[in-house]
Amino acid sequence: MQDNVYVYILIMAAVSYAIRALPVTLIRGRIRSPFLQSFLYYVPYVTLSVMTFPAIIQATQTPLSGALALAAGILAALAGASLFQVASLCCIIVLLSEFLLLH
Amino acid sequence: MRNETNSQAFRAGFHDGIPIGLGYFAVAFALGVAARDAGMTPFQGFLASILCNASAGEYAGFTVIAARSGYPGMALITLVANARYLLMSTAMSQRLDPEMKKIHRFGMAMYITDEIFAIEIARPGYLHPFYTYGAAAIASPMWGAGTALGILAGNLMPVRIVSALSVALFGMFLAVIIPPARKDRVILVLVLVCFAASWICEKLPLTGSLSQGNRVILLTVILSAAAALLFPHPAEEEASEAAS
Image 1 (cartoon, helix red, strand yellow):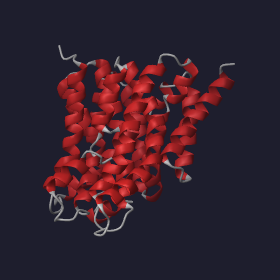
Image 2: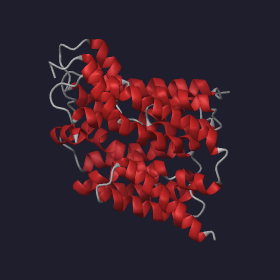
Image 3: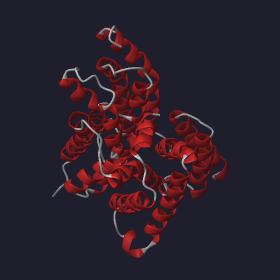
């Protein structure tokens, strides 16, 4: 029965806001637990990594074009390209490689 | 910072927010494609984006909406996908004037995003709330409009273009995780372990039957806890890296 899109959006908005608002309004000193500090430090990298692969090679028309975009994105990010540049490059790689592969 | 008026700070923020808004617009367009796959209307996409201002968090949320995985699942995955904002918010608390009106803490918290946080931290002294509002005034509507347009135009676009845009978000995620991986070998190894674990979990019958959202939560908790136990990360470095 949980199928109201607006309720999903409100929950998403409320949780997103609470995460941002709670530390800046409540925390005066530092979090003391070294484990919790470390855990929070690693969470974003793990979440984003897990969401990126293998999803990136499944999002495209052929796995190869997604794999090429992954490789190009990693190289560009290593070379210091901005978020926008890396995202654009991945799109262009998929567009070009699928144009060549599917013709 | 003291001698900067509210309107000066707002205009400076708006100016710096323009390139962010342009980048957001393109990335949000791809996010709109994911929202369209979840069966959302352009208005719902716009609403979600101006209320959440989160890329990975919204993408994760849209996969929950697509599967109608339930309200508790939505709360949990939003928490997990946005957990890095806990760190940024914590770092931000160290950069605010103790005499600033408390209402601004609530206002500024709304716009803690990777990019807006980055331009705020790059300014000297205490953060000016109106600088944040200026940047948000251009960046957030562009984010919302891009999402709505992605849902609208996604229907009209050739498969080839949709396929290309669908990797924009993953490209953005790479731009967030790869540069720190170059500086910190632990993160580099962790990213590679995550890729492998994610792939294996999808293939295994037990974990493969979970929804993608639940797999992300499971892997995040297990792998982050393992990394925290094996490679404790001191708080001082954490604060400076969150600020970089």
